Image (tube, rainbow, N blue to C red; front, side):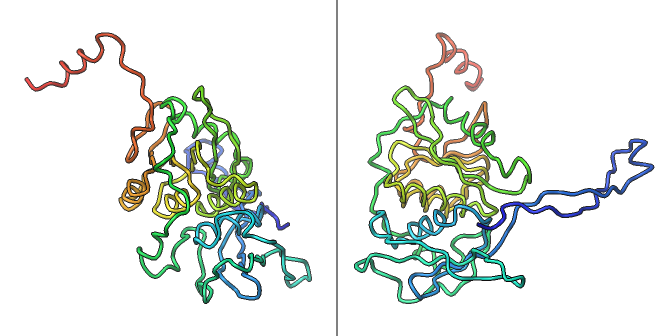
Length: 302
């Protein structure tokens, strides 16, 4: 397994106006960085894609990536995963090539994506928007899940408190899968961190596939960044009914969530959130007696 973090010397420049900063504005120290390295994904002997990622949970990443590409959707379709031989200049195993063996009846792409995928973009290699609107084998629209708004708004804090790599580096995204129980409480099933937000989601989906949990009914996927089209697509293909993000969604993400029957929330904070699609799944308590009339009077035209 490759290193997840790396120590590097940095020059910290302080400009806060304090006497210490005025006397010693430049300080030398060590900082901890999240590692970013390439991972080549092979389907048998065929090189399929190369993505930049933080090492760790690489088998989950590959499995989730294959789900996101619409190639597999059940654990029995994935026969095996293994690291291939790969060495750095010092002769050390790099763990940067993973080979996936698929069941013989699984339809394979004719060629690899032949595209380098950066840690900031998971669908850069697709030819068009239509190409990524893949037909899912699961339908989030059929999931009857209801989530109390208080539970949904609390998930970012629950995600943040479990982010071990972010705690020491401040430089990774996170995706957390929460199961919503009948009483409305949330249980963290899986959390993954990565320099790429799409990789973090693929690692969660890949974990679920390998555990035989797809489709992920009755769950919420909470992500630490924004809700892009690609993240909605990945959630939909895994059968996740609710995606919540700390930051904003894109217009195309909202359109895909609506088309897929998903609930999409953004700007999720402890005390507020925006629901952009599927608001019927978010249970909001009724206002206290008389409060509704007071609000109506306050905001009614003069």
